[in-house]
Amino acid sequence: MSGTSTNGNPTIERMVMILNALERAPSGLSQSDLVQQTGLARSTVYRILNSLADSRLLRETAPGTYVFGNRFLELAARVTPTSHFFSLARYLQSDLEALAANIGQSCKISVYENGAIMVVAGATAKRPHALNYEIGEYLPVHAGGASKVLMAYLPDDERERLLRKNPVALTERTITDRNQLRKELAEVRAQGWAEDRGEYSLSVSAFAAPICDHTGAVIAALSVPFLTTADEALRDRLRAETISGADKLSRLIEHYAG
Image 1 (cartoon, helix red, strand yellow):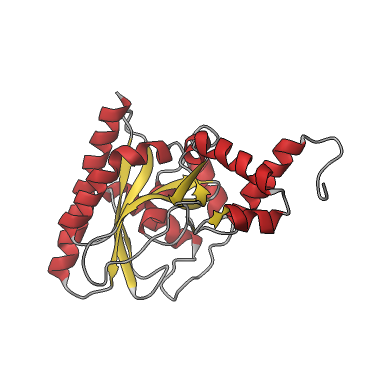
Image 2: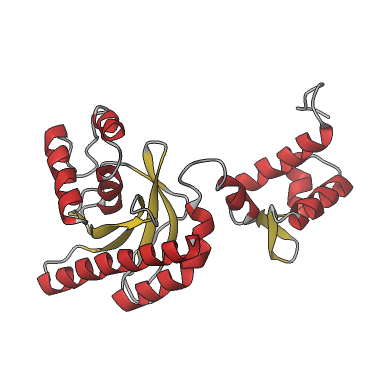
Protein backbone atom coordinates (compact mmCIF):
# COMPACT_ATOMS: atom_id res chain seq x y z
CA MET A 1 0.00 0.00 0.00
CA SER A 2 1.41 3.42 -0.92
CA GLY A 3 2.35 5.82 1.88
CA THR A 4 2.93 3.10 4.49
CA SER A 5 6.17 2.14 6.21
CA THR A 6 7.79 -1.15 5.36
CA ASN A 7 8.40 -1.67 9.09
CA GLY A 8 4.95 -0.56 10.22
CA ASN A 9 1.74 -2.31 11.09
CA PRO A 10 -0.59 -2.18 8.05
CA THR A 11 -3.76 -2.25 10.15
CA ILE A 12 -2.62 0.63 12.33
CA GLU A 13 -1.48 2.61 9.31
CA ARG A 14 -4.85 2.16 7.60
CA MET A 15 -6.63 3.21 10.77
CA VAL A 16 -4.49 6.36 10.93
CA MET A 17 -5.37 7.13 7.31
CA ILE A 18 -9.04 7.02 8.24
CA LEU A 19 -8.51 9.19 11.34
CA ASN A 20 -6.51 11.70 9.32
CA ALA A 21 -9.35 11.96 6.80
CA LEU A 22 -11.89 12.48 9.57
CA GLU A 23 -9.72 15.16 11.16
CA ARG A 24 -10.09 17.20 7.99
CA ALA A 25 -13.88 16.85 8.03
CA PRO A 26 -15.35 18.01 11.38
CA SER A 27 -18.90 17.38 10.15
CA GLY A 28 -18.07 13.73 9.46
CA LEU A 29 -17.57 11.36 6.55
CA SER A 30 -19.42 8.35 5.24
CA GLN A 31 -17.89 4.98 4.48
CA SER A 32 -17.96 5.81 0.76
CA ASP A 33 -16.22 9.15 1.42
CA LEU A 34 -13.49 7.39 3.38
CA VAL A 35 -12.99 4.78 0.67
CA GLN A 36 -12.59 7.53 -1.89
CA GLN A 37 -10.27 9.71 0.21
CA THR A 38 -8.01 6.97 1.56
CA GLY A 39 -7.96 4.59 -1.42
CA LEU A 40 -8.58 1.67 0.94
CA ALA A 41 -10.81 -1.26 0.09
CA ARG A 42 -14.43 -0.87 1.14
CA SER A 43 -14.24 -4.02 3.29
CA THR A 44 -11.16 -2.67 5.08
CA VAL A 45 -12.83 0.68 5.82
CA TYR A 46 -15.95 -1.14 7.03
CA ARG A 47 -14.01 -3.32 9.49
CA ILE A 48 -11.96 -0.42 10.86
CA LEU A 49 -14.99 1.84 11.25
CA ASN A 50 -16.83 -0.86 13.19
CA SER A 51 -13.85 -1.45 15.47
CA LEU A 52 -13.35 2.26 16.15
CA ALA A 53 -17.07 2.78 16.79
CA ASP A 54 -17.18 -0.20 19.17
CA SER A 55 -14.29 1.39 21.08
CA ARG A 56 -16.11 4.77 21.15
CA LEU A 57 -13.25 6.37 19.25
CA LEU A 58 -15.80 7.17 16.55
CA ARG A 59 -19.52 7.77 16.69
CA GLU A 60 -22.28 8.10 14.14
CA THR A 61 -23.93 11.51 13.90
CA ALA A 62 -26.30 10.16 11.26
CA PRO A 63 -26.66 6.66 9.81
CA GLY A 64 -23.37 5.88 8.12
CA THR A 65 -21.68 9.23 8.94
CA TYR A 66 -18.77 9.12 11.37
CA VAL A 67 -17.01 11.72 13.56
CA PHE A 68 -14.55 11.46 16.43
CA GLY A 69 -16.03 9.98 19.61
CA ASN A 70 -15.82 10.95 23.26
CA ARG A 71 -13.21 8.28 23.95
CA PHE A 72 -10.59 10.57 22.43
CA LEU A 73 -11.35 13.18 25.10
CA GLU A 74 -11.14 10.54 27.82
CA LEU A 75 -7.74 9.44 26.55
CA ALA A 76 -6.58 13.04 26.26
CA ALA A 77 -7.54 13.54 29.90
CA ARG A 78 -4.69 11.23 30.85
CA VAL A 79 -2.09 12.89 28.64
CA THR A 80 -1.81 16.49 29.80
CA PRO A 81 -2.10 17.93 33.30
CA THR A 82 -5.03 20.23 32.55
CA SER A 83 -7.11 18.53 29.88
CA HIS A 84 -8.49 16.18 32.55
CA PHE A 85 -11.16 18.88 32.79
CA PHE A 86 -12.71 17.40 29.63
CA SER A 87 -13.86 14.41 31.68
CA LEU A 88 -15.25 16.67 34.41
CA ALA A 89 -17.11 18.79 31.89
CA ARG A 90 -19.81 16.17 31.31
CA TYR A 91 -20.73 16.33 35.01
CA LEU A 92 -20.84 20.12 34.95
CA GLN A 93 -22.70 20.56 31.67
CA SER A 94 -26.24 20.69 33.04
CA ASP A 95 -25.20 23.17 35.73
CA LEU A 96 -23.35 25.24 33.15
CA GLU A 97 -26.44 25.33 30.95
CA ALA A 98 -28.58 26.37 33.93
CA LEU A 99 -26.07 29.11 34.70
CA ALA A 100 -26.18 30.42 31.12
CA ALA A 101 -29.98 30.42 31.22
CA ASN A 102 -29.99 32.30 34.51
CA ILE A 103 -27.41 34.88 33.45
CA GLY A 104 -28.85 35.26 29.97
CA GLN A 105 -25.39 35.10 28.40
CA SER A 106 -23.21 32.29 27.10
CA CYS A 107 -20.74 30.79 29.58
CA LYS A 108 -17.36 29.17 28.92
CA ILE A 109 -14.93 27.13 30.99
CA SER A 110 -11.28 27.42 30.00
CA VAL A 111 -7.99 25.94 31.23
CA TYR A 112 -4.32 26.79 30.82
CA GLU A 113 -2.66 24.44 28.35
CA ASN A 114 0.87 24.63 26.95
CA GLY A 115 1.23 28.39 27.02
CA ALA A 116 -2.29 29.13 25.80
CA ILE A 117 -5.87 29.09 27.01
CA MET A 118 -8.15 26.26 25.86
CA VAL A 119 -11.95 26.28 25.98
CA VAL A 120 -13.07 22.91 27.39
CA ALA A 121 -16.79 23.41 28.04
CA GLY A 122 -19.55 25.90 27.40
CA ALA A 123 -23.25 26.65 27.26
CA THR A 124 -25.01 29.05 24.91
CA ALA A 125 -27.80 31.24 26.24
CA LYS A 126 -31.14 30.88 24.46
CA ARG A 127 -31.46 34.54 23.57
CA PRO A 128 -30.70 36.84 20.65
CA HIS A 129 -27.10 38.06 20.37
CA ALA A 130 -25.73 35.37 22.70
CA LEU A 131 -22.07 34.90 21.77
CA ASN A 132 -20.69 31.65 20.42
CA TYR A 133 -17.61 29.63 21.42
CA GLU A 134 -15.74 26.60 20.14
CA ILE A 135 -14.74 23.66 22.33
CA GLY A 136 -11.03 22.98 21.97
CA GLU A 137 -10.35 26.51 20.73
CA TYR A 138 -7.00 27.97 21.81
CA LEU A 139 -6.91 31.62 22.90
CA PRO A 140 -3.99 33.95 23.71
CA VAL A 141 -2.87 33.80 27.31
CA HIS A 142 -2.58 37.58 27.85
CA ALA A 143 -5.87 38.91 26.46
CA GLY A 144 -9.40 38.23 27.71
CA GLY A 145 -11.10 37.58 31.01
CA ALA A 146 -10.39 33.87 31.37
CA SER A 147 -6.87 34.36 30.06
CA LYS A 148 -6.05 36.94 32.73
CA VAL A 149 -7.58 34.82 35.50
CA LEU A 150 -5.59 31.75 34.54
CA MET A 151 -2.39 33.69 33.97
CA ALA A 152 -2.80 35.49 37.29
CA TYR A 153 -2.86 32.24 39.24
CA LEU A 154 0.05 30.54 37.47
CA PRO A 155 3.25 29.89 39.44
CA ASP A 156 5.44 33.01 39.41
CA ASP A 157 8.15 31.51 37.21
CA GLU A 158 5.67 30.31 34.58
CA ARG A 159 3.87 33.67 34.54
CA GLU A 160 7.17 35.51 34.08
CA ARG A 161 8.18 33.14 31.30
CA LEU A 162 4.99 34.05 29.43
CA LEU A 163 5.45 37.76 30.06
CA ARG A 164 8.90 37.62 28.50
CA LYS A 165 7.32 36.58 25.19
CA ASN A 166 6.25 40.16 24.37
CA PRO A 167 2.41 40.14 24.37
CA VAL A 168 0.92 41.04 21.00
CA ALA A 169 -1.78 43.70 20.59
CA LEU A 170 -5.01 42.13 19.30
CA THR A 171 -7.00 45.36 19.64
CA GLU A 172 -6.17 48.87 20.79
CA ARG A 173 -7.22 47.83 24.30
CA THR A 174 -4.94 44.80 24.63
CA ILE A 175 -2.43 45.25 27.45
CA THR A 176 1.01 44.73 25.97
CA ASP A 177 3.22 46.59 28.45
CA ARG A 178 4.71 43.94 30.75
CA ASN A 179 4.64 46.05 33.90
CA GLN A 180 1.06 47.13 33.26
CA LEU A 181 0.07 43.52 32.67
CA ARG A 182 1.82 42.45 35.88
CA LYS A 183 -0.14 45.10 37.77
CA GLU A 184 -3.40 43.96 36.14
CA LEU A 185 -2.75 40.32 37.08
CA ALA A 186 -1.96 41.30 40.66
CA GLU A 187 -5.31 43.09 40.82
CA VAL A 188 -7.04 39.99 39.46
CA ARG A 189 -5.51 37.89 42.24
CA ALA A 190 -6.47 40.47 44.87
CA GLN A 191 -10.11 40.88 43.79
CA GLY A 192 -10.73 37.31 42.58
CA TRP A 193 -12.08 38.17 39.13
CA ALA A 194 -11.03 39.68 35.81
CA GLU A 195 -12.60 41.93 33.22
CA ASP A 196 -12.05 41.89 29.47
CA ARG A 197 -12.55 45.44 28.22
CA GLY A 198 -12.39 44.61 24.53
CA GLU A 199 -8.83 43.26 24.63
CA TYR A 200 -9.50 40.35 22.28
CA SER A 201 -12.37 41.87 20.27
CA LEU A 202 -13.41 45.51 20.61
CA SER A 203 -17.13 44.73 20.49
CA VAL A 204 -16.95 42.01 23.15
CA SER A 205 -16.44 42.39 26.89
CA ALA A 206 -16.35 39.66 29.52
CA PHE A 207 -16.07 38.89 33.19
CA ALA A 208 -14.21 35.83 34.44
CA ALA A 209 -13.56 34.18 37.79
CA PRO A 210 -11.43 31.23 38.96
CA ILE A 211 -12.71 27.69 39.38
CA CYS A 212 -10.89 25.79 42.12
CA ASP A 213 -10.45 22.15 43.07
CA HIS A 214 -10.87 20.69 46.56
CA THR A 215 -7.41 21.97 47.58
CA GLY A 216 -8.22 25.53 46.60
CA ALA A 217 -5.92 25.43 43.57
CA VAL A 218 -7.19 27.28 40.48
CA ILE A 219 -7.72 24.71 37.74
CA ALA A 220 -9.99 26.58 35.32
CA ALA A 221 -11.84 29.83 34.74
CA LEU A 222 -15.49 30.60 34.11
CA SER A 223 -15.99 33.46 31.67
CA VAL A 224 -19.15 35.23 30.56
CA PRO A 225 -18.66 37.17 27.30
CA PHE A 226 -21.20 39.78 26.24
CA LEU A 227 -21.57 42.58 23.72
CA THR A 228 -19.91 45.68 25.12
CA THR A 229 -22.38 47.92 26.90
CA ALA A 230 -22.40 51.11 28.96
CA ASP A 231 -25.24 49.77 31.14
CA GLU A 232 -23.51 49.70 34.54
CA ALA A 233 -26.37 47.89 36.25
CA LEU A 234 -26.13 45.07 33.72
CA ARG A 235 -22.35 44.95 34.04
CA ASP A 236 -22.58 44.76 37.83
CA ARG A 237 -25.07 41.91 37.61
CA LEU A 238 -22.97 39.98 35.10
CA ARG A 239 -19.86 40.36 37.25
CA ALA A 240 -21.67 39.14 40.37
CA GLU A 241 -23.24 36.21 38.51
CA THR A 242 -19.86 35.21 37.09
CA ILE A 243 -18.21 35.16 40.50
CA SER A 244 -21.04 33.22 42.15
CA GLY A 245 -21.21 30.85 39.17
CA ALA A 246 -17.51 30.05 39.45
CA ASP A 247 -17.92 29.42 43.18
CA LYS A 248 -20.78 27.01 42.49
CA LEU A 249 -18.78 25.12 39.87
CA SER A 250 -15.87 24.87 42.31
CA ARG A 251 -18.17 23.28 44.90
CA LEU A 252 -19.50 20.87 42.29
CA ILE A 253 -15.98 19.83 41.32
CA GLU A 254 -15.16 19.23 44.97
CA HIS A 255 -18.27 17.05 45.23
CA TYR A 256 -17.45 14.98 42.13
CA ALA A 257 -13.80 14.64 43.14
CA GLY A 258 -14.90 13.33 46.48
